[in-house]
Image (cartoon, rainbow, N blue to C red):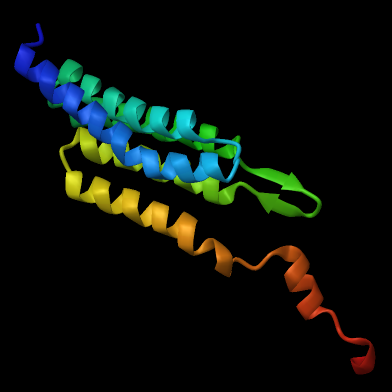
Length: 153
């Protein structure tokens, strides 16, 4: 039976996972990517929830907990792969897929009370999405700089 104190702690952990996923989710939603507010927040809280529930249900069994991790990582990889699209000779969605993985790591860090790691992962993901995007070389830009000019042929 879960005590009121345990319930409050778990609720706080799930809320923290949700809150730490929001900046990443907002960025993806704002940029109209395939995954957004709902996907990222649900990935964070479900990862956190699965790990808390598993730890409380199976007890201190590294083998059993390892199987839970394996299932989670497989599932998160499947969700992330759905965000990757190959179109017109290029690939889109890899940053969204990587962000899904990272958001799961945020939820996992919260589940294990590693809030410092969760905060750093959340901030780093947000910073990469917001401020490194302008430095990305687009295929059309790369093709125009790689192609020889008429005077060079």
